[in-house]
Amino acid sequence: MTKVKSPSARRFARVALICLAALLSVERIRAEAMPAPKRDWRDEIVYVIVIQKWFNGNRANDYMLDRFGAVKNQYEGGLWGGDLDGIIQKLDYLSSLGVTALLLYPVVANDRMPFGKYLPTGYRPRDYFQVDENFGSLETLKRLVDGAHQRHMRVILDLPLGFPGAEHPYLQDPSKKDWFGEMTAYGVRQWDTDNPDVADYLIKISRFWKDESHCDGFRLDSSHLHSMEFWKRYARELKGAAHDKDFFLLAEVPLSPAKIGEFIKATGFDSAYDFSAGIAREVFGKAANVDRISAVLREGKDLYPTPSRLCAQLDEYEDPEFITSAKKPKEARMKMAMTYLLTLNRIPLLYSGDEVAASYREVGGVFTPERQSSPFLEYTRRLVALRKREKVLRSGDLVEAQSRNPIYAYLRAQGDDRILVIFNTSAEARSISFPLGPLRWADCGLIDLLSAQTVKTKADAGQMQIEPFSARVLRVFH
Image (cartoon, rainbow, N blue to C red; front, side, top):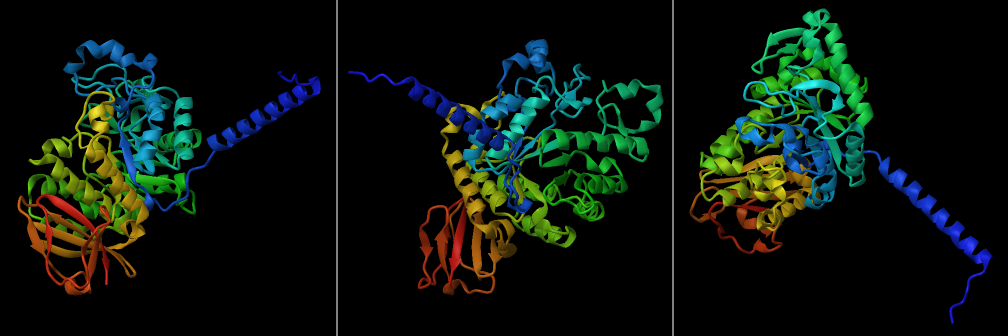
């Protein structure tokens, strides 16, 4: 027989449910307002998302696809469906990958019409104070940043402040004629930041996105187009007089390492791209001599104020991806390059597709069943987890141990903690032995950190074999 609850019991149950709902609502608000995690930026593993090809989460905003999709093969680039909702829907995937920060290519409202053979791809701002209609809205961006913060991931926004889009209204404003400088290769003039009004305008834009989105930093595209005096003021005003260490300023300065080092020292930026790290494409992807890695690392040590704060990458937005340009065996070469990227004394930037060793153009191409079940994805996850677990890989010194083609090796060292990273770039297995910094080979044991297997004991003074086109990450004990 069912027992009927009394009216007072029912009222109590209703009140309890209301209180529980209120408590859950408060917890939800607290979670949504969760601030960005506090970490040294050298601890970050950054995942780079080109929004327009990442994932289509809202087909109602496919405006450019609906308008030009039938003839999109005529154009190089375009906003073909990827959007901010798509990133939100894949935040759990990114969290499971283990990355700790996201770098989003530009979200600002872009030109709507073609310019020659190009359609907008983020770098032709029509309205600097709006999210592009193909991506969503400012509210969508806020939800994305909140969702990332809940998962302990930071968010960096790419701000294209070098020049406006062809449809930017100031280009047609007679009162703004002196706002523009030299003509760029994109058919519009760059902003003239020697004009104080222009400098004020670009800083106003940046403050807007910092304050409204609650993002954690900016990537500043084509930073070499403006004077270091402007960027010095920019850094001071965006980071405050005390130079807030938590808000990250990353400069793209496509010049020599000497010029990059000079830029960082003069402006107070946190980081810049170390384009020299792209030598991995030549050494691991195309069989260039390993001494070229030695040369660029020595150069970086001499010219960069803090090499470990610079950012390294295998791929770029415009170049053919590593996996496309690499010689065969492509996947084995990609594994070497990924191991290099995630054990190097730089902040690693993983471009979408790197984690599955894939080049893709179709929207959502990372998420095909074949790619999501690939052994390469699991290998990437293990490398990412290893870098997160081992502090020496993030902040330890880098000491070259061997550079004799086809073997390249370095130690990451911090106090008594040493991790040895070895690459065999040839098609033949090699037997190796060499001093490990101040330690003799014969006095050391080695444990493979990706397989947890001991590969050399201290009692074994003999050589170790490394397989063709492979990398090993080894704990040194003595």
